[in-house]
Amino acid sequence: MTRILDGKAIAAELRAEIAEKTAILKQTRGIQPGIALLLVGENPASQVYVRSKAKACEELGFYSETLHKPADTSEEDVLAQVRAWNTDPHIHGILVQLPLPKHIDEMRVLLAIAPSKDVDGFHPENVGRLVAGLPGFVSCTPAGIMEIIKRSNIEMRGKHAVVVGRSNIVGKPMANLLYQKNPHANAIVTICHTAAADLAYYTKQADVLIAAVGVPEVITGEQVKDGVVVIDVGINRIVDASAPKGTRLVGDVHYESVAAKASAITPVPGGVGPMTIAMLMSNTYQSAAGEVY
Ligand code: GUN
Image 1 (spheres, rainbow, N blue to C red):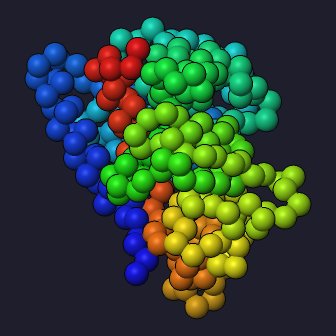
Image 2: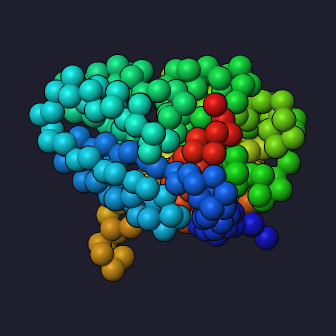
Image 3: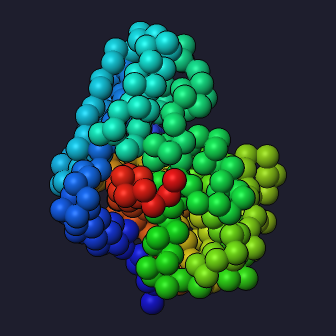
């Protein structure tokens, strides 16, 4: 029997815990976690994400403010806004939705965010803290995957974890979390990327496979071994004439053929996706409570 790792249920559990802790933080210390969301331009996916983040804040009793700026906003304007939030006592987390328009240097903007408010975990200070095994904010999607692993009691110690994808947001922090010497990690880690001539050579060796490629259904059942644990980070919309809307969401793994061999797998949707916002809320709560910096 293949175990379905229900990220939606785990995220709901986590959000309920944060809502409860938030109520206590307000009562005992008079602190309401606050997050500032900056969206530049009209990217439709980014608009959906930012709206979902603001809605999560409302549900959990957080303060939030969303600033939606036009696509031609200057880099200086963005930097000035970030700096204003850096010193705003109501704001414990600053989130600049990526991607930014091409005329804005993303790294300059990320570097301007105070590391202590960088709840996305993208500032090089927080990336460095992760690599060094120090407390800091960790990118929400990989942090959410670790939470799925932990709450599903998946043993990682000594296992061969293969991460497919080397993005700053998922692949790199994921690999760094998996090899850390702690009870829910301690894995042996391989990172694969586009230069791999034979991707299957690596994926077949995985005890735990993390697919963060961004290509629909690219990893198939023939490319994994029996009993593999599969974490599918992909969210891809594909055309499907038989689906009610004419399209449907799929992951980076071909679900049917991979699930047939896997001991456990995250579905798409309802797997990794819901964990990202839950971890953003968790990071912001921790920032407000002073648990990280
Ligand atoms: N764009 C895609 N994923 C993310 C994310 O996790 N945070 C931000 N800020 N932008 C993104």
